[in-house]
Structures are given as C-alpha cells and as structure tokens.
Length: 89
Image 1 (cartoon, rainbow, N blue to C red):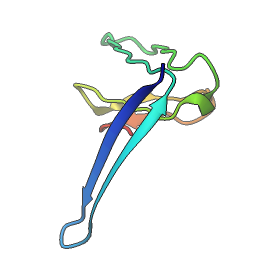
Image 2 (image 1 turned 90 degrees about the vertical axis):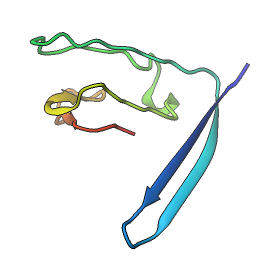
Image 3 (image 1 turned 180 degrees about the vertical axis):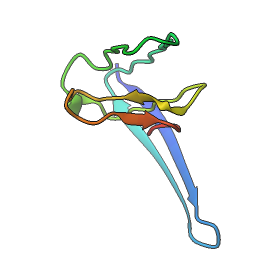
C-alpha cells in the first residue's frame, strides 16, 4: 500500500513576489527517525535509508536546537560537514 506525503512551501520576499507551492508525493514507505545527541559526543551515525540515496524523495531535518557546532554529512565522508543552523529541507 502506498503512502502520501503532502507538503506546502510558502515564500515571500519583502516588497517582492510571494510564491506558494503545494505538492503530494506518493511513496511506498516512509521513515520517521528521532535522534538524541548526547552533549560531548563527537559523532553519531544515523542510518536514514538502507538502499540507494536515489530512493529518498523527501528529507526534512529539524531540531529543537540549532547552531554552528552541530553539523551533519550525507554518504560521503570526504564531503565537508553541513551546519545544522536552521531547518534543513
């Protein structure tokens, strides 16, 4: 049985355009992952998708804390870390 993910994006530039996009993604499955990061722990590995990255249609990363010292990487250990300084979409 397929699942549906409904999402909406609203963007408004001050004194500029306003754009609203609404879309539905039909997927075979979805995962919701809760991760607790212990203060002082250097690295925490989280398996998001056991298959290929091409199978990921939608990824949202949010936190109750953001900052320059909190970072993440995706698949490539040689890639520079990405700061988790705001909601990631």
